[in-house]
Structures are given as structure tokens and as C-alpha cells.
Amino acid sequence: MSTTTAPAAGTSTTGGPFSWTDDGAAVTVTLDGVQVLTYTYAANDPQEESPRPYFHPVRTRTGDLVSAYRPHDHVWHKGIAWSLPHLGPDNFWGGPSYRRGQDYRWLPNNGAMRHRELGQATDDDGTFRFAHSLQWVTQQGSLVVEEERSFQVVPGTDSSYTLVFDTAMTNVSGEPIHIGSPTTEGRENAGYGGLFWRGPRSFAGGSIIGPGGATGEELRGQRAPWLSFVGQHDETCRFSTLVMVDDPGSEHPEPEWFARSEPFACMGPAPFFSQEVLFEAGTTLHYRYGVVIADGQSDAQRSEALALAARELLAATQGRNGQ
Image (tube, rainbow, N blue to C red; front, side):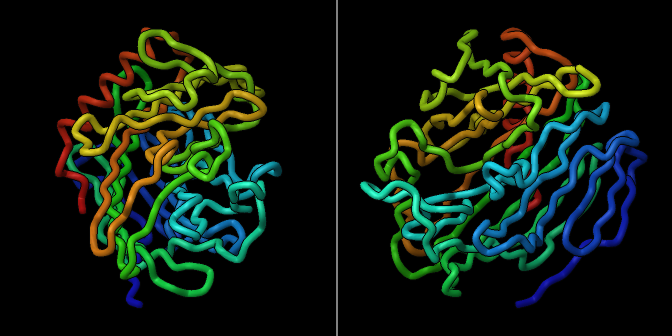
């Protein structure tokens, strides 16, 4: 397996706002002097946590932390990560697996997403871009998925920036795979899986806001183009806002959402929430999302404005993801 790594450090070649460092396993991105995120692309977590890339720490432009890593209640939760609990019989989420009529069980099925090769780590026209390829390997050592993944960091207005996440997964197992969730296995309203964010402890009890001013955990399982979460920080008592948006040009149905405010903060578009997706052998599934990280408290109007700006950004950058 060939592997290349990014330069040890980089600065904008266009006089832009970015600099970054790369230690061969993780790249840390600095925006206007603030380390806004670290992306660990070659994770070495325990097998039972399904090692996979993740974004953590993730900070606002003023430096407030908006992600959690290995919380004691679910140590396999890692900041913001692309995680699938039911890829056929295999678990690429971490932890125990839900099985119909049997509840959660620890099984020898925790796979790993392994970094294979670096594509790029560059700053271009005021945007930071990173791309790499991965291989998804089961706990028994079988290669089932090859993935091309990229992300962008795009400064925004209103004390915000947007993380654009793009993945193209190809089924190389030689067999069709059904992708689902605990809900497709029989657990009601637990359709998590996909791009998943876990917030810091102090965000428990925060506000979930959706389109049209809808609020609360009743948004879990509902379809929407975006969802936002507003939380308050310990120590500083400041507020921060996260808005996750679906690519308006997506070929997939508008996602259902998994979101919780209690007992902890989490959120994510869940494309396999209530219905399995058949992943045919040799085919490629493509998913793309934006995550707005903004300083300050947001009401429904501001959340909607941040979501609209992110969706316009996704539409404008379609095909420029670096893959």
C-alpha cells in the first residue's frame, strides 16, 4: 500500500489567510492566526472504536471549541466524522452494533478507514483544500470500499467559516452491500450514520433549529435541507452556532436528520436513517455537505441566512472539490 504525506508546513501562496502544518497523520489549519481545525487522516484508535479520520479540535474564528473527542459515554464519537454503523454486517461507526431483537451487542465487526495516499494540501483563492484516498477494511481484513475524500475550509462573513466535506465511496467488495442504521434494524428513531458532529459537554441543552423556525428534538427523523445547533460555552459563557447543510445539487433524496440536545449535543444528516440503500458492487456513492462554524448566538433568522449562504457556496463550488 503506497502512502504519501503532506509537507510539514504550509502557508498561503496567494497572500491569503491560511497556514497549516502536517505531521504525517494529521493536518492543522490556521485561519487568520487561529487554529480552527485539525483533521486526523491516519487515525490509530483502538479497533473497537472503528479507526477513521475525524475533525477535532474544531474551533470558531475566535477560538471557542465546538467539538468533543472520545466522550466517556461514547468513546467512539470523534468530533466531526464520516461514520457508518451498518455497512452490510460491518460497523464503521465504532462501539457495539444494534441487531434486531437483540439490542446492542459487541461483535467482531468494527472496521477501519485507512489513509492510503495524499492528494493535495493547498491554499487557492482564499480557500484551503485537502484531499486523500482511503481504504475501508473489515476487522477480518477484507477490503470492501475505496474512497476519495476531500474537504475545503472557506472563510465567510458574519464571523464564520464553512467546512465543505466531499466523499466518493466505491464498493470494491465484489458483492452488493446494504447500508442502513439502527432504525433499519428495528430501533425506533435512531437512524444515525453519515457525517456526524458531537458537541462539547456544555452544549447539552442547547437549541436545535430547522427551516421555517422549527425547533427541538422533534426534528430528529425529519427531512430538511439543513439543521443548526446553538450552544453555550463554559468559562467564556459565549455562544457558538453550527449549521450543517446538504448539497443542493445532490442526486440523493433530501436527508433525514439525527439530532439530540440531551443528554449531549450531536447532529448530522443521516442518508440511511429509515431506509436501506443498496450499494451495488463496482458502483460509487457520492455525498457532499457544508458545515458552518460561526461565533455567536443564532435565532431562526440567522440560522436560515447561514444555511442559505452555505448552500450557495456548495452550488458555486460543485466540481471544484479537489478530487
